[in-house]
Image (cartoon, rainbow, N blue to C red):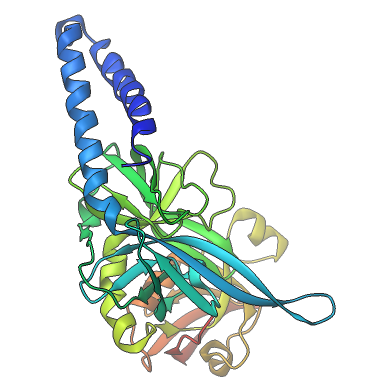
Length: 350
C-alpha cells in the first residue's frame, strides 16, 4: 500500500537503536546479529500489519467554510483532515476543529470512493465530532481500550490528507493524562502524548497500537507541538459517541467562570490571603456563576467541601455533577470567606 514502504527504514532504525541500547546495558543480555535482525523484522512486520489493518478505514475529510473579505463579500475557504470509520452505518469519528462551521463536507476513502458527508454532532470541549456517509461494504476500524495504555508502548498515527494515500508516523506513548491549555477558557484534558508527529491533514485520524486497535484520535490543534503528537483517548470518544449520534451534542454541566491557579505570583499581585484555589479572572454573562453571585476577583477555595487547587481539578468536579444540581462554593472575597450556592446549567454551544 502506498505510504508504507518509506516507513520501513525508519522502523528499522528506531527499533534497531532501541535494541542496541538495551543490549548495551549488559554483555550477558546482548543478542547475536542474526537474532537482532530477526527481532527487528518481526516488530517491523507487526507495525506494518497493524497499519494495513486500519488504513482502509481512514478517510479524507474535505470541508468548505464561508468567510468574509474586507468588502464583506462571502468567500469560500477549503480545509481538510482525516477521520476513521467505526460503524457499518457509515459513522466517522474525527476532530471538531476539522469540520468546525463546515457548509459542505466531502469524504474520500482510500479505495477511491467519494461521498457527501453529513454532520451528525460534535463536542468542542474534547475536540471530537461525528460525520456520516451513505455507503455499503465499508472497512471498519476496531476501537480499543485507551485505559490500558502505558508509557513506552509502540503506537502509529495514521491520516489521509490527500484522499487516496495514507500517511503514517511511528513512535511510542510518551505520556498519558496530559492536560493542554489552548485558551484561558479551554483545556483539552487527559490527552495521550506520543513521539509520532501529527502531519498536516492528519488531524482526526486514528492513533493505533500494534494490535491494529484505535487507541486515540490524533489532534493537531495544539500549535506548539513540535516533534511530538497528541491524541484524544478513544475511551473519551466511546463515552460520548452514542449521545452525539442521538442528540448531536453532549449535555454537560456549566458554571461559567474563567479561572487561573493561585500561584505565589497571583497571590502577591492580588494580595490574597490563601495559598491555593482558583482566582476568577472573568465571569460569563448570564451564567450560573453570575446568577449565583460569583464575581471577578473571587477565589474558589472549595466546592462541596472538596479542596480546589487547580482549574483542571475544578473542571473535573463540575463534570461529575448533573445539570440543574446545586453546588456549594466556599470563596474568598476581599479577605473574607463566604459561602455561595450555585445551580449548574447546561453548557451553551461554543
